[in-house]
Amino acid sequence: RARGLLMATIFQCVSGTLFTAQCTFTVAGALTDPTTITVIAQCSNGTPAVGTATKVSLGVWTANIDTTGCSGWLGGTYIGTGACQVAENFAVEVVNQAG
Image (cartoon, rainbow, N blue to C red):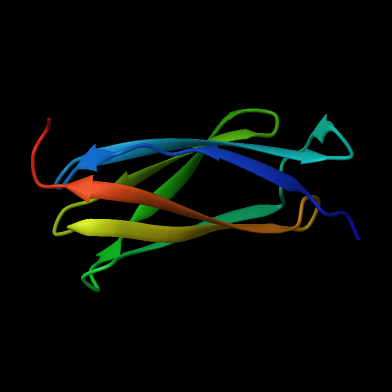
């Protein structure tokens, strides 16, 4: 069974905005698309955060996550199945204003 490596770029964002996390999936060093990708996220205050994965190119995906109602930390997991099986956690700090 193939295991993948996920690398995600996550940053600080302002509550009520979308932030985009780019993910690169590889198997044995080769860019690989998982058969399915799920993004699950929840804010530290219990608010679920909705994320949608979109393919950029082979093995490269972005997830736009809505932070409306979030404050503090948002934690989540990218889950890849099939050709690239991976579950990778991420966290981002959600602040109330830009600054």
